[in-house]
Image 1 (cartoon, rainbow over the protein chains, first blue to last red):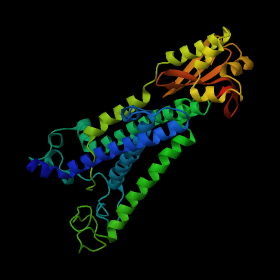
Image 2: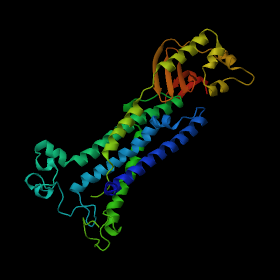
Image 3: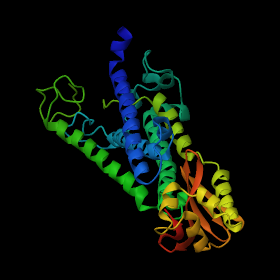
Image 4: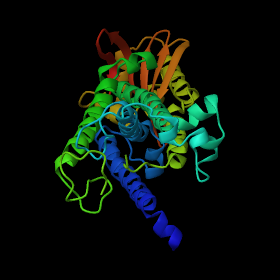
Length: 224
Length: 133
């Protein structure tokens, strides 16, 4: 019970993620079958649709944009600040910060992770940048998956239209690929912009994403 | 910086599944066999059998009123298929390029069927096909 309470936020998002993905699979199958039957084809089962490039490209294109959003947010907030936003560091603190402030090496505490206490050189660099690297890596993998699945779905559609399939190189330079990518990116970038700016002036009582209700608009990096 | 972070434990295997699912190239032997059989039946003047290899929607749309599918195929006198040059399979659809013809096929529950045959390329547009559903 204690474990559930301590991990409630992750578990809540995990459950919502699984339910949303299952819902997408069912709704996607129904939509796919509607098109199939209209074109003289046969309806497919949910597992068949989930294994298709149509489902894969829809999943991957959303994943890549979400991970790009977090990657950019993590990396840009190292170097850029927004005065008054709880999502930002204080102006003047831009950059990777000192070892003392980051509690690295001799400044580490007994509770610090082992790699922060003992690691040097590439291992310390790796651990120091592991969050950004992980987000960036998942973004690139998801974008690659989108390109592969997208090519497959696009080519199946082209064959249905009695047209030649295209190569992966042609697909990743096509309007279809960039339209799919950019329409997701613009919405993610707008969402982050909204979060950074609105959190200067608006409050959500009790949320660590917000400043305390009574905190001044000018206060930066104060979480409620 | 307190935005929630989705666990990579779930993300990484899922990306692999996405790559696998989308990268699974289907077996090109099925559509190749159907295309060869279709042209073999036409060469042997067994148009009824060739019609049985057409997608239902194609077989229904091919004949003029009062004409059978076999009659329509006989009248069209498609060029011989010849040896297969290339096969592309994407999802449930395939293109088979033969020396004398290009065919488009779709996979149904009972196997691959010809959706279009006697197809000639038209730059920047869909193929122009004598047999098309």
